[in-house]
Length: 106
Image 1 (cartoon, helix red, strand yellow):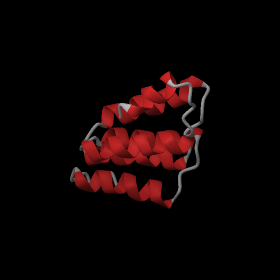
Image 2 (cartoon, one colour; image 1 turned 90 degrees about the vertical axis):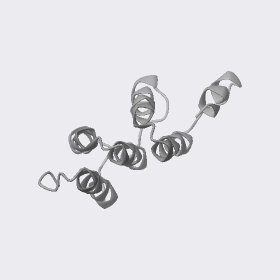
Image 3 (cartoon, helix red, strand yellow; image 1 turned 60 degrees about the horizontal axis):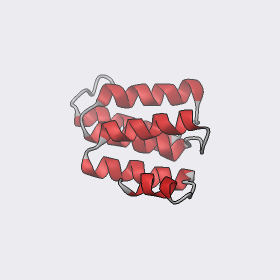
């Protein structure tokens, strides 16, 4: 996670694949709030736009932390504004509900 700011310091530009890797790393260490901050940064920075993988990774990070309501809100945002949700996006949101024992929401 510390390498992302270092990229900027060195004058390098992170692409969507780089951001996706950082959000996936956030999921692995339980840093769901950081994954949301990175997603927001991407949306506001004028840099690379979040893609389906980006948003699905953020859904996964929230779901792994038990934040199923936020995971569903992210999926809802994808359906309303994009990027286009795919089967993995839906399955990841369903898994977030399952993990939190909120099967009715799935």
